[in-house]
Length: 88
Image (cartoon, rainbow, N blue to C red):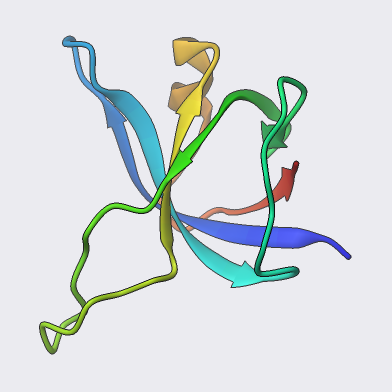
């Protein structure tokens, strides 16, 4: 079964912070990443985190994930609202 996310924020600053926040949409809830994992067809590092985020009612969310890309230039090709497939 395929795993889909929606890009909600792209952090590509001049500093060391370069990552994507994405909302889980569908697919298996449990997954693990490998050295060959991709998000939206772009290689990502085998590290995924769940940042502490709140919804509009100040309730914690559990569907937001942060992905670190292997090639920082790939971040420029992703757009907020874009639906992407995770290949773990």
